[in-house]
Image 1 (cartoon, one colour):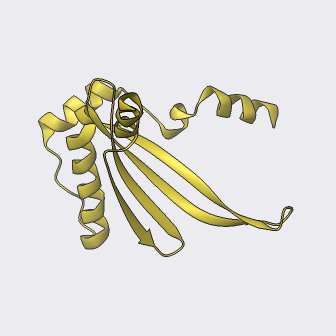
Image 2 (image 1 turned 180 degrees about the horizontal axis):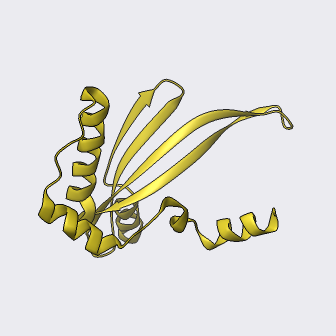
Length: 124
């Protein structure tokens, strides 16, 4: 019984659902076996499968680890502020150099998984 309780705790510590039109966002706090917290953010959209004549939920998930919380929150705050005001946020030079050093020069297309790369190649 204790083993089952520990597994459930690792799977979900806290959860918050946000309904937004046709989408629902789930913010779930989970714990690793060493009790380090991380967040999963899931976007869920209800879709209809014409072939089966049934509804299903399409889900997209990201994992956000403790060491990335501050950078993620800062980036989200900056883009929301830009959308609300139209003003490009001032970037701290030290932070920008640190981000560039951490990331190198990364393009979105570089982030595709090997499976996606194989799918792209097979569709050519």
